[in-house]
Length: 101
Image (tube, rainbow, N blue to C red; front, top):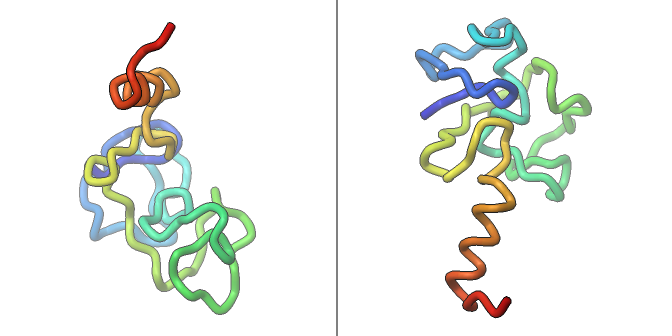
């Protein structure tokens, strides 16, 4: 599922996301680092690709040629760019290590 980072609205045609594309749900830009599959906080320029010029505003439309919209379902990510809630993470840890409380 391809979705907006901000509101989670589905992106109808992920191949048609251009610099001027905006979300049908909230009207925010879609071609942004936060929606990109290469967005990697902590990496050089916060990008998994080798980019010549880092993008400063990750939540604004840009001209990056590496942009490829993130498939939130394949990555297990939720709208908002977060891979699930803290409660889900705790459940997974409890299942792995056992609930000792």
